[in-house]
Structure formats: structure tokens, C-alpha cells
Image (cartoon, rainbow, N blue to C red; front, side, top):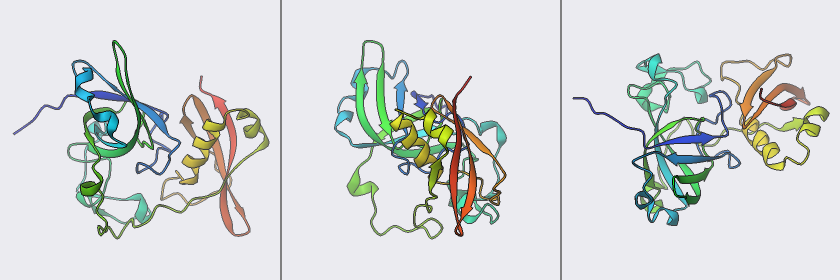
Length: 233
């Protein structure tokens, strides 16, 4: 038995590529985006009452993984990228049906003559992600106080983020962008299997900027230094 799934919306996100996109929602509050409904689902009646919700569930497609197949066992980043677990015991992107879910903060609903736009924050989805369903987040049923998952009981430890002089100058009067960069990089987007190499330069696209950074060891603790912040070409 097969079912056809049709996107009802597409995400306009500050994340332009998979690298550096958070692995879970809500941990980068400065990450904002828009869920733009498409015809015939952009009928204002379809979101009537949604404005009363503080948070919503987005069910979406890992569209960049569909053609890469799946495996019964995967290597979760939280386990260092070396230990394998069953795909259904993880939130791995490479899944049999490439379906994901994410809870985001609904900042506001915007309705115009031609568009229905949901402005959200705390998202962990890359630009262009197809959304297949939207549901309200219901605290009494969706937040289970005694739930447990032994492999990710707490959010990852944050790494201090600093900006070199050139990067600071590039971000002058761009407080929101600087805050976004700090929050994203503090999650340590480095692949779990990469050992920290102070000579290695990493890069990612955020909003309309190319960001580069390195890792530094100071007094036995690692930190990140942002080297450049330049407009994408």
C-alpha cells in the first residue's frame, strides 16, 4: 500500500545548507523563518484559530536525503558519530520515508490577498524544506514530564564564541545576525567524528552571509573564533 503526500507549505529559513543547522528545534531561539502555505492550502480559513497557539508542530520532508536511501543502523552525533543504533531509535535524517517533525514557536500569522505566512522562531529546518502538515502544540499531552531518553537527556554543552576584529566590524549594527551566529556556533556544528584541529577553518551560510570560524584552545578549554562574515555572492 502506498500513499501520496503533497507539500502544503515551504520553509523560508535562515539556514541555507544542512551544515551548522541545529539537530533539534528550540535550541537556537534567534533562528527565525517563515512557513509559506501554497495553493490550495493557502486559504485563510485553513489557519483560523492558529493565531492562538504559542507553538506548532511541523511535519516535513528531509528533501535533501530522499535519494540517498536509508540503513537499519545509523551513527547518532550525540554518541560521537561512531556508535551505531537502530534508525527508529534515533532522529536520523536518512529514514525509510524521510519524514521529520519539529516544534517551533509561532510568532505571528500574516494573511494577505495572496499569501498565508506563519512567522516562526527556534526552527531547525533548512531553506526550502517541504512541510506536509501543521498541528497545534498542546502542552498537557505533548509535554510528558516523566519521559526519558538516555542518550540525549540534556542539551549539548555550549562552546564560547568570540569574534575577531574583522568579524566584529562586519557585524557592526547587526545585532540580530551576531546573536544568530553566536547561538548557532555555540552548539558546535562540527561533525561528531571530527577531532578539534586549531588549523582547520570551517564555513557555513547563515541568512545571506558566509561565516568562517576556527577552534582555539585556551587554558584547557576550547572556544570558537569567528574569522569572517561576508555577503554571499
